[in-house]
Image 1 (cartoon, rainbow, N blue to C red):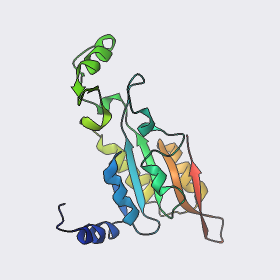
Image 2: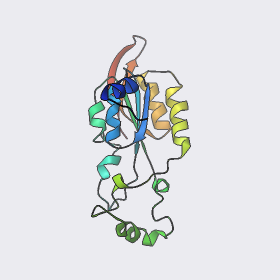
Image 3: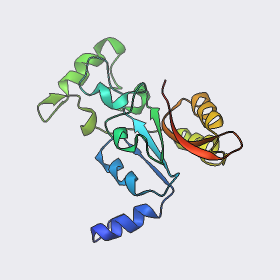
Length: 173
């Protein structure tokens, strides 16, 4: 949604509980989410030979995720697969690399930040049903639900035991 001022953006984003988006600078708005808010970062599929593989990391925070590290927000990631990229679907696997490399963007071949993605709606539906609607902030429960559904839990603001004392945990793949 377009806003007329930075103040309107701040008000709009601070009224959200959840922010979902493909990896990129637009996710920086997630810092305005209220305590215990959720950010779902959709990680672009990157061929192994291509530039930008760090944006799809599941073993450490992504570059965007660093700003949510050790905060009171819940930051999850979901790695998109080859089916999320419509580019070069018309060629067989053996010719795929040549096809990608032929698609030049800003002088770079196959740049993750200059292409379209198709995200299966089941990804968001699963995020809602298995993470958001479970209404459990227990660390072990969050870790299990994320892992069972192929999400990486980069930053979890969660509780241990019955004391309900919150801490920040990190559960990478």
